[in-house]
Image 1 (cartoon, helix red, strand yellow):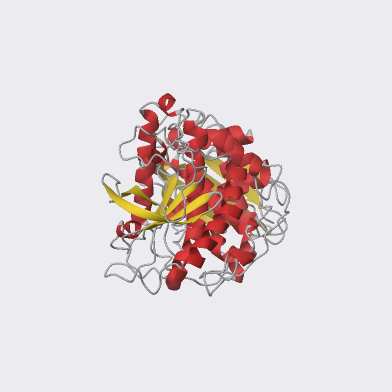
Image 2 (tube, helix red, strand yellow):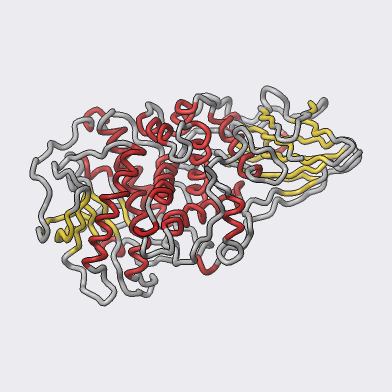
Length: 559
């Protein structure tokens, strides 16, 4: 069932921050388009074109009435590198009677100052990317040795008032740790809420009722939602519970919040006894209410209560993934872009399943759990060419990239799961898959990754587009993104829909950089009784694009 357009409530947003299709990597000969193949499509019809096999040019035919096409030039590679796979491209549209002229595809629309959308949390993204790299290094050091988790101590759960020690990252590389002592404030059936003993009491601190509510939300909804979707957690300490430690040390990780702040984290090394500094237990660390500092705005009690539930269900997916892939199966940890995409999908699962009565800090659970994904999706669609879907490992996916990964996984679940609303068949398959990243996606869907990317990109524009047939895979089944963004524009989002393809009637020449999994969007209008429009696509300088890009053209006839 489609998610109708729903209103969000403006709020302070806290920033939380190899493919078999690849061919030769070097440039090829200069391409010349001498016999462009006509792509005669019905309304709603699509074509995915491989320039290496089909041709680097095509003809979009006209008719007695005006026709409109969507053309997306994209990189279909799933290869993961440190910086991300990218390469130059040129795209030209020419009418039989016209001359191509240089044009710009434009940039992203103005951000919304009230929500701080103009600031990408590079600090937080770098921190989480560093944790994922450290986990990858653990696996590379001998994944088989990690298959046997830390022997359970069979100590059972702690009691309220019990104190224990924890090691918390002391800097953004987590190269140093700080030892803290915390007290168990709430012991639930699935989680234990601990509070750092060194935090000064304040008028805006989390109350006992707040902590009890957070604990019951985790026990009743967040933990069951994630374990159904992704699988079981480990239990390395025998407590049968996950520790949630609220500490000012997380606030201190980002003394300057101009580029976002760390709200909470999970590190897989805490499940591995041989990892120096391991807490040898399932544990999350989360920020705490704190007055404003010279570098950061205040974290109020309301801000903390609004931010922590999405962070918990997000980080829980990372914990489950490490257990399912590394500890249980001795496989590689999931590649960062897909790992983050799955965690953002977990936030959506909470949006759909947690009742509004359990989200008192927000107007609704939709607002509490969906806001971050919709904001990230807005950033991505505002300028898709500038974003990696398949992000590099050096700094992890940006906010834009997280938006792309969430939108992509949501589309995959819509079309390849028996339960298209929750997508459990897909999420379980990905957590249990032998491969990672694009290979994992292709195995779970039985479809080449480059094909999936092309169809998904077309769907971003065609979904719920008036006059476009809403059948097949060129659509979303569970969201009406156009209605949702429009319902929140202009009060939250500057535009009613962020994706704005560059328009042309056949006089366009543009160039830029293709990034893995994304590319530029162009709307081509063929006026009535004026012949056709020829489209040419190549790498920089008119040569064939490097094979590592897996360059493709996706075309849909809109009307």
